[in-house]
Amino acid sequence: MKLFTNTVYAVVHAIDEIFNQNRYADKVIEKTLKSNPKWGARDRGFIAESVYDMVRWWRLINFLSPSKDNYQLFGTYWLLQGRTLPDWKEFKGLDSDTIHRKYERLNNRAVIQSIPDWLDEMGAELLGDKWEEEINTLNQQAEVVLRVNTLKITREQLMNRLAGEEIESYAPKGYKDALVLAKRQNVFKNAAFKEGLFEVQDASSQLVSAALDVEPGMRVIDACAGAGGKSLHLAALMQNKGRILSMDTEGWKLQNTKIRARRNGISIIEPRVIEGNKTIKRLSESADRLLLDVPCSGLGVLKRNPDTKWKLTPESITKVQGIQEEILQNYSSMVKKGGIMVYATCSILPSENQHQVEKFLASEKGKEFELLEDQKVLAQESGFDGFYIAKLKRKEA
Ligand SMILES: C[S@@+](CC[C@H](N)C(=O)[O-])C[C@H]1O[C@@H](n2cnc3c(N)ncnc32)[C@H](O)[C@@H]1O
Image 1 (cartoon, rainbow, N blue to C red):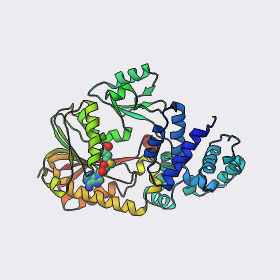
Image 2: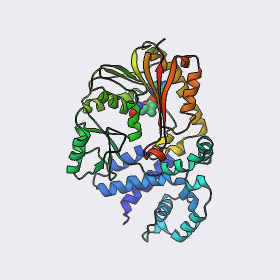
Image 3: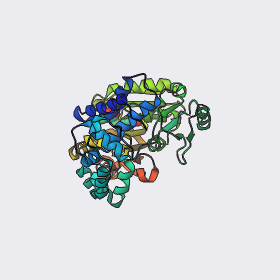
Image 4: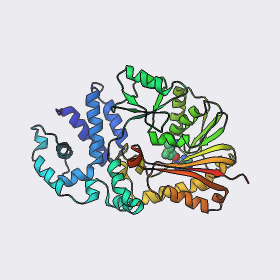
């Protein structure tokens, strides 16, 4: 593959913004791609993939040929892929054999997997012999998964429509609304997306709304709705009948939910900003179904957001665990007696998952609930993102 100065410059510049200005990789990539409308699909693919890959392998490439110069680091990444470099002055001094020999001699797992030492220790402690395979899987590129908007189209119809545009996909077993694209590509410009026929949502994430067993006509609360991915799915499962209160502490995220609901042809979603405990108290015992898709470390979605591993710290994980605990304690009162509550994270750490549910069930508030089932979705087993989904019932009396 031939390298071009302008697209390599875009990658190097984006890396500088991510690591030196502490910006989110997805936002930086979005801005970079917008900066030059003349780039075609191949250029865009090259930029996005190279930036994500360099972020993913940042510790490893810095170990193999330490440098402050992002061109040199790009060159190391490129050679590590088994590719060759052009004769540019920016790549002077880089030698493929030296880099590969150093790589082959490596025996430190945290460096090989390109993660911080603390994360390797925490993962090994909490996941035992499943950790190595899990982090290995999470270091791979994510597939593009669509969730069919069944309010507008069937999965088969969408598959055929996309195939007509030479976008091949397959229907993964066990995920009834999902389609996986055979080749990674940006589908947000596709007419079918603009018509609201699908959303981009990982297959594991699609298990969350399904676990709530919603029915048309129910009153549902999605208490950490964010941009509304799960709310939209819930609305489709309810055939757009009933009411969904999509709540979040961040009002700007709920604005996105509104836009997406309109595109999806959904009218039953009502966004509501959480302004404090009063908002929650007013909704006491009002929901047939309650979704707590709580903030978490995001360690289950490292494939998609590789920069998470450089932004997280053991302290930030402890902090988010405190928020999860509070949400379980304070928000669970919103579900009616006899109703169902789902607690979900996109984390693979038991400390954010089953340990939280165990702690909740042992507490005074938790005594009113029983655990019906939980799914510990590891990326290595599902092939998709890592998730945790616990389904609890509020006892009748
Ligand atoms: C995992 S994300 C939700 C993703 C969303 N459900 C979706 O499917 O797109 C967690 C959300 O919880 C929100 N959040 C953080 N603290 C909260 C709190 N105390 N109460 C409610 N939401 C909170 C965050 O703003 C974030 O949008």
